[in-house]
Each structure stands twice: as structure tokens, then as C-alpha cells.
Length: 193
Image (tube, rainbow, N blue to C red; front, side):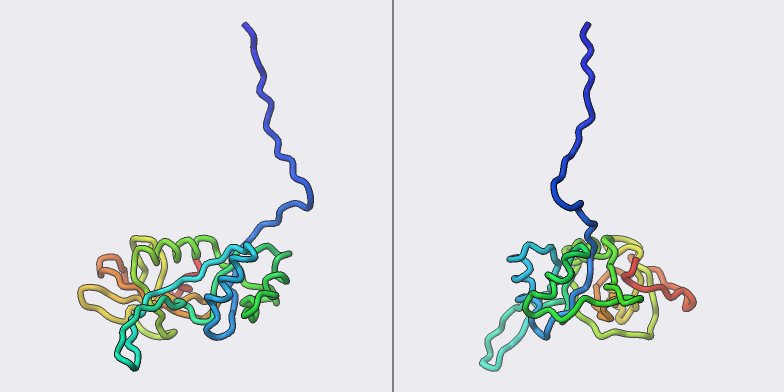
């Protein structure tokens, strides 16, 4: 009987080692989010521009449905440290959102993943940043574990979730059964999980 040994496969890479990429919030000039996203596609930079649908009525009486940025003035990019300079060469970009210590604030992959899947499941719209009101934790669905402020209650609740890094909020409509109230002492950032 002949035994054949299998060798371990090896990956060879040429050039500098690949650096880990992270998600960052990118601040853009006013009303240029989609144009910046187009430039990022051309430059093959991974990005995410959350959109929502808004019905508008023009002065001439015609009605249109627009896809607008959920976070006005912001989109999210996945880049490595060496790509930061290349990113700021994109027309319409202003700066990366900075965190403590003068470094750009990294967003957790789970936050971007939850936004992507949650926005496919639920309708969302921008909402003014709130600092008071009843806080609740979402118990199920893509946003499970996130905390926000309840602003309306009928058959469904509208919960305002805040992206702390960019100080922007959006609201999501959820059934009351998907929420659990939080005591006032339990104040944790909504989307920084």
C-alpha cells in the first residue's frame, strides 16, 4: 500500500504585506455624497452609502421618489492606513471623522453589517439627534442589541438610533414586542457595539 503525504499549502505574496482595513466615516461636502460614492467606485475603494426613499412634490405638482443619503454629509469607507491620503484626494471629500488621540475613529464591522442588513429589512429615515426620551433596547432582528430612543408608539414604535461617531441619527419602525425598556441608569451608545 502506498501512502502519500499531503504538504501544507502555502500562499506566496509579492510586495508589501497586506494591512488590515477598517470602516471609517467620511465627511463630504454638502449634497455630494452620491458623487463621492461614484468616485470611490472608480478608484476601487470599498464604501457604503446608506440611502432612504423620500416622496416629494415639486412646485409644478409632479411627484417623485428620491433616494437620499440617510446620513447627510457622510458615507462609510473601508480602507487601510496607507489609503487615507488617497481617499482625501477624492473630489467632494472633506475629512475622515476623527476620534480621540487625533486618529480617525474606526467603526466596528458589526455596525456596518447591521446597517446593511437592517436597512434591507426595515424602512428608515433620518431623524434629528435626540438627547432625552425613553430609551429601549431592540430584542430581535438585524438591529438586535442596539439601543435607541422611542419617539412614537401606536401599533409600531419608531426608535431613533444614533451613530455616535458622526453625531447623526436615524429612526426605524419596529413592533412593540421587539423592544425592551431600559432603566434610566443604563445609557450606552446606540450603534457603537
